[in-house]
Amino acid sequence: MKIVVQRVKNAKVEVDEKVVGKIEKGFLVLLGVSSEDTKEEADYLVKKLCNLRVFEDENEKMNLSLKDVNGKLLIVSQFTLYADCSKGNRPSFVNAARPEKAEELYEYFCKQCKEKYEIEVEKGIFGANMQVSLLNDGPVTIIIEK
Image (tube, rainbow, N blue to C red; front, side, top):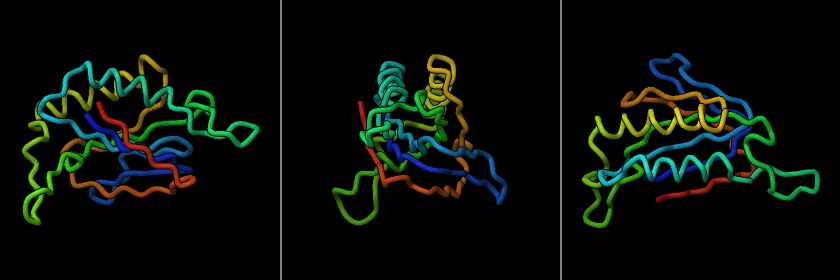
């Protein structure tokens, strides 16, 4: 499992020109699930994400977490994080999980963030063609995988 975390001032995701998820201060998270992933990997990444200290404190040090700043999450599924571009110019996605498995782990991941860490979660629509907009704060972009 792999996540790309972007610290944002705001972010939104649209499907068919309708906003389906929107946050102010927090993280836009792009979530990729591999064919080998389990709930164990999801739990590890949920814990890392929800405790990630990349918001500035009063001394301008990245020392605060989402909870500390009342931040929100916008979590978007993205199988293309498992693109293999090692051969040719057309990416292969053989390492990405099948949609059924990926959706189950995506939903589990979102639920854990919300229920276990009490963080407000907005989502994209799994499998949809989405347009994602954001104002990256910093910019701060971090990749975490398990």
